[in-house]
Amino acid sequence: MSDPDLARRAEKLDGSDELAAKRSEFELDDTVYLDGNSLGALPAAVPGRIEDVVRRQWGRLRIRSWDESGWWTAPERIGDRIAPLVGAAPGQIVVGDSTSVNVFKALVAAVRMAGPGRDEIVVDASTFPTDGYIAESAARLTGSTLRPVPPAEVPGALGARTAAVLLNHVDYRTGRLHDLPSLTAAVHAAGALAVWDLCHSAGALPVGLDEHGVDLAVGCTYKYLNGGPGAPAYLYVRRELQDRFDSPLPGWNSHADPFGMSPAYTPAPGALRGRVGTPDILSLLALEAALEVWDGVPVETVRAKSLALTDFFLECVTAYVPPGAVECVTPLAHAERGSQVALRCADAGNVMKRLIDRGVVGDFRHPDILRFGFTPLYVGFADVERAARVLGEVLGGAAG
Ligand SMILES: Cc1ncc(COP(=O)(O)O)c(C=O)c1O
Image 1: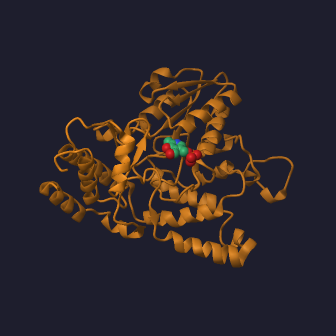
Image 2 (image 1 turned 60 degrees about the vertical axis):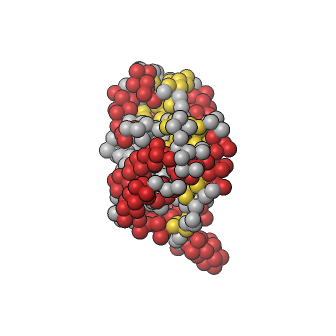
Image 3 (image 1 turned 135 degrees about the horizontal axis):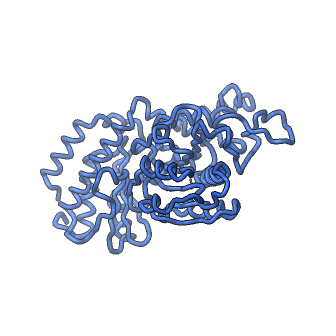
């Protein structure tokens, strides 16, 4: 049963929500979708755009579309569309390949740019696994030693041998937000390069890449940026480093004169050095259409709503869920919280199945975490109240 006070508060919060109108720009149904931190919802503009790309641009214009439909320049153009969402000036982001591939490019390039005698890579010990696997391979390829270190202990682990540090901005499991400005400053004070994985922060909170002097960054576009399943990732290379960025994957798309077909490689200037091969045009252009929902949306507004949603969810969980049935592993301090709430819970896999059966979609992370992502563009406060209420019912709380 609904708590009338919480239900009234949810209604009031939805009534004063500046982003409420954005919901109509997405294809939604009557489930509460709290998994946009894994796969964002479908923006309503995407199917029509894809229809045009397939039928007209590909079907009728065919090869002409590389120029006439702007296919060739899409990786940089769409990179510039993402740039304001992560606090980057234009000309520093290219879109393409997966996050994993971009982690590889960024990390190997970072080690190559680090000064002589620097042969150590520090990696976030709690990283999303792909970053760890790739860091291990990058270390072997560059003759470096890999040191996994918890993010809070990174400043104490840095030294004259540190070449590069790879960190996740938000921990995918706990939702903990790491302090990008101070960690980046510590990495720089040690003379090393900072590489950030923004998968769980871009589109959810301000990142400030330029402001904080981040060297390289990568991120996916299928979570908070709603680019669709398998949408291409992006690579940020700070402008001052671009001339020294020596890609470990120097494909022909990053050549200064790709159609010169020269046997010798000459890198293109600027961010497009991060390109590799022929871009995945269908996915790229679906992403471009998806990014239109951000027109006129300040990231600060998104962040304010995200914190309000997660605060309200925690309050509703306290009211509806039996004491001791869940333990919140997401930090309560706003400065340390991303846009998700992770609850430790016995039999979490089955609990999540029962939630999904009842129309509340989050996800389960091994071994005991219920993960709920809050995407401020299309999740509202009534959704939050309902999700916590159903969780209380599933766990046999008073509401059940
Ligand atoms: C922090 C982080 N890095 C990387 C990835 C995955 O990378 P890819 O796009 O290569 O699958 C994820 C996926 O959820 C992630 O959360």
